[in-house]
Amino acid sequence: MGSRIAIASDHAGFRLKEMLKVYLQEKGHTVVDFGTDSEESVDYPLFIRPAAEAVAKGEAELGIVIGGSGNGEAIVANKVKGVRCAVCWNTESARFGKEHNNANVIALGQRLVSEAMAQMIVDTWLAAEFAGGRHLRRIEEIEA
Image 1 (spheres, rainbow, N blue to C red):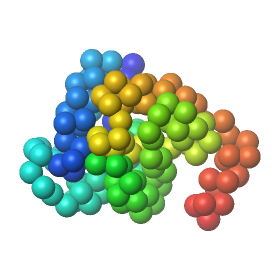
Image 2 (cartoon, rainbow, N blue to C red):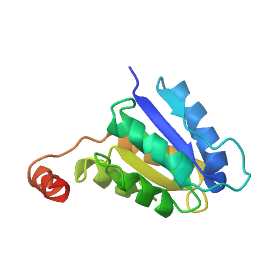
Image 3 (spheres, one colour):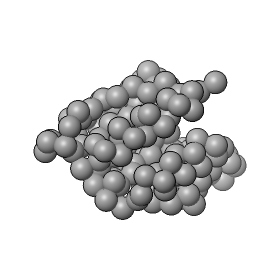
Image 4 (cartoon, rainbow, N blue to C red):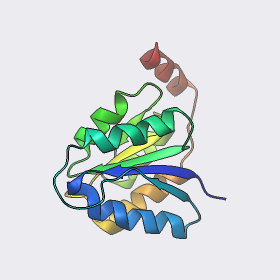
């Protein structure tokens, strides 16, 4: 049984978003697309914030936000209370994002990772589990 995953991108992440949508659906996940819908230049907060808010509200279990580097998208997502967004550029960053930070959203950069690496990152993040323990205490300190 798959997860309900919010996904969003700006123009610089559009192609990777479209590929990941299909990839995730083929793996049995429900994907809710918050846009954008083309490679025409847009302001990324207009698309990223609603996806992050969907995760924070429980309308989606997880989220993936995509841009050129993923950095701006992570900054926007992390402004939403209840979201912990990790920028991921390889499988280790994805695994640690979940195990140590309980990341419920990840940010990817279309200009920095190949489609194959993006798939591996997503698979690793989805399969990883939060380690709890000292990491839970640290998350509580962040949210305090």
